[in-house]
Length: 383
Image (cartoon, rainbow, N blue to C red; front, side, top):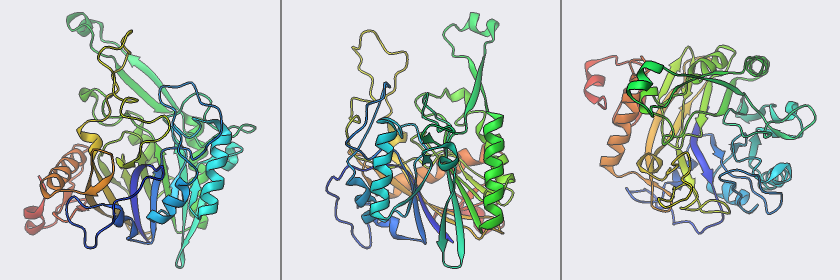
């Protein structure tokens, strides 16, 4: 089973740059979605013209015509459990689901109850089946589904903060260290669902909206929040073959664990301007009064450097992975990466992955290997 996977997707019906075959650096990267058996992305915006706007910093929506656009671009399956899903309430997500269903785009992660929101979407690929879950840990208050409330599938996170008083006296203003762990009852429910799905399907994939956007996370704490690796490994131990991360808006490391693969963050793929999303919405104004406690300023280098992930799964052997670098242009549209940018993306991706403690090598064609097996592979390693 060959999967083509991309990160966050926001569509709004804008005219698309014609796709060129074969594509050259700088050309549209939408053509990359046509490879493989299934194309999967994270739908980062509800598709609705109705609903009541949530009281939050950024509340987004795009027209329901975006669903047909997703289908035209080549998306087969999208995750819906994310931090903007309920920006216009349950009615907004009901509109989204109806639009996706009409366009033939499959989805998981939203439901009228927690049982429906956490139900896997089962997709047939030839003689094999894929069970696809969508959970969110970047969870605004009230967005999660309950037994009697519509919402998204959630794995909540508990947090506490460590202050080193001696160090803070010497270096005042230093942020505390954030300890985090996945909420145990939610993890146990997810494990049980995955185990059951694995009994009846060849492959299980789990989309997780989690982690911290690059502009918020202190470098000294590393790219991953503390809860992420233990949670991902538990879900793989339960039977998941693939974890697909999103939310940080940049590329994060990859990890092979057992017979599973963890893509900690798949970055961005396309971000059209839409209702609630504009250049000003995530770029802090220098003259703002009072000054905001955080300086969002997401639209920086990591935002514009991303990749398309090609994953091959059979449910028995370890997954195979090839990473195809892309760039986002000034309008956050995906383009084929320039050679020097592609090389830089692969090099930093390999370095970050090796920092997790594995012997990861990335060949010049983007093939990711768990270990270097020969001098020839070593020579090709991106470093």
